[in-house]
Length: 286
Image 1 (cartoon, one colour):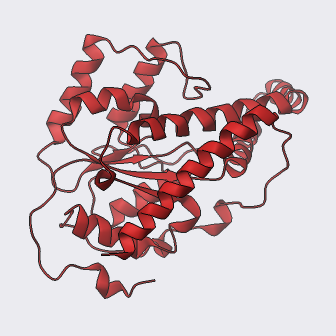
Image 2 (cartoon, rainbow, N blue to C red):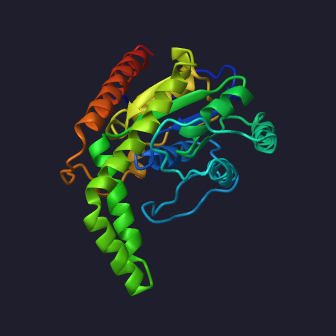
């Protein structure tokens, strides 16, 4: 761990106006990362989505990007739980809205956004934005699936209609195995698309971080953003100031995932881990 003072550059050079995009599957630490970036001085949105089920501190998502992504998925008869490779269609109106969002922000210093659905729509943004940087954050698929279940159970507990609440509880008890495999398929598809997008980028334009490492290498990450990517008008704030370890549950329920899905998930996890290792080597050279 670096001393905090070493996170600050000795002199300021050019400022980076290229957007910083946070890419990661739902329940993978993207909200914590975006909250930390906001604390450090990044402009992550004009109107943020507030607290909700599973994110008591807020989602730290720009409402306009969130709404656009929901519109895209709805037009393609999809929800955020995309579980297989599909090609999304973008209408001219949607493409114009996306371009307008970028044009409205492109002259800002140290700006970006976070919405896990961005993982599904990066082919659109890649065509619109001339240059951008990505922080890719990933989390163990066992933990993500377990977190999705816990969030769903919490949502069921909040149902006001006791009959509907009971039906939903029984449904998830009876079909837990199918739901677990579905959630794993969602994890696979999001991270597959993340890896697909990073192949469009130069290695210098993305870093890959495991969610559980964020609290240990926050200073290294900040130094990289500040010195390598020239996001200068920022101030290092330790991520400890927002980290809530009790919310990041590590011990999970054992789910009997389909072997073919485990094979796919492990291959993706392995590729992400290798990229994370390369990221670490780049960061320690600064």
